[in-house]
Length: 203
Length: 77
Image 1: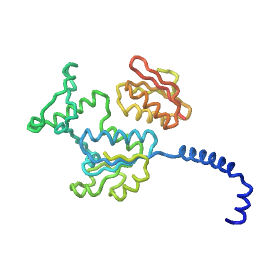
Image 2: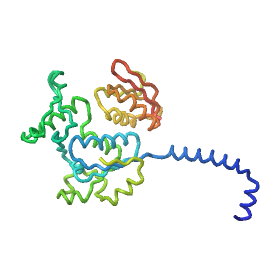
Image 3: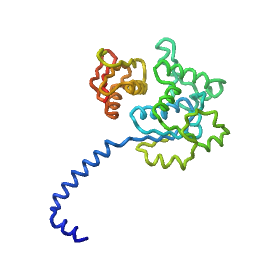
Image 4: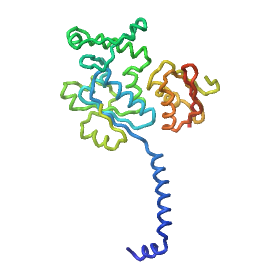
């Protein structure tokens, strides 16, 4: 301790100093919190219509709230960045998925069709039909389309990253994807970003 | 719907998160102090609109429910 510090310590009342520090600390922390822009990082790994909703809903909403958003699309998630979205849904092996008709009288719409897996697996085009019905349901209920949500993400300046390894693995070419992609990167580039974000989700 | 708002937004029939996304978009076109009146039917919008305003620092002047429709007035800050 230097001579000045000694003098200072003698003349200061420790209790007062603590009180001053507590107040100052509180004020500084509040200031910091007010100036902090929250951030969200999502790792999107699924390429079906149902699994396309969570990342795009969360990313577009966070964007609307003024958050910094970045989404890393990897493996089947890369399908969500295609110029032409042909996302399908599969009820096969998904007992949690209600199977209801989006048209007809209400009593018909209320029926949850329990179709056995073996039947779903055996009927050609079953997934196409299920996808068509889901698209109709989405429309009827005023839920946004994936295209719409993706545009909202881009408008809100969300950074959409594509996994370069997946492109090579699945033999894609970069021009199959939307030009707004923020970067073709790998895990080593995304992880340091995710580390700094307030919310990080794997979907 | 409040008629003296600077702008109105009809979000009826839209589901989460569309009312919020449209609100955000409409607010960007407004100047500070101007108001936006929103009508929505999504029951989730009641909580969502409060959270949106709290997070973005805009003022939720009023919110009300009338026969399944929700009305909000937001002042841009």
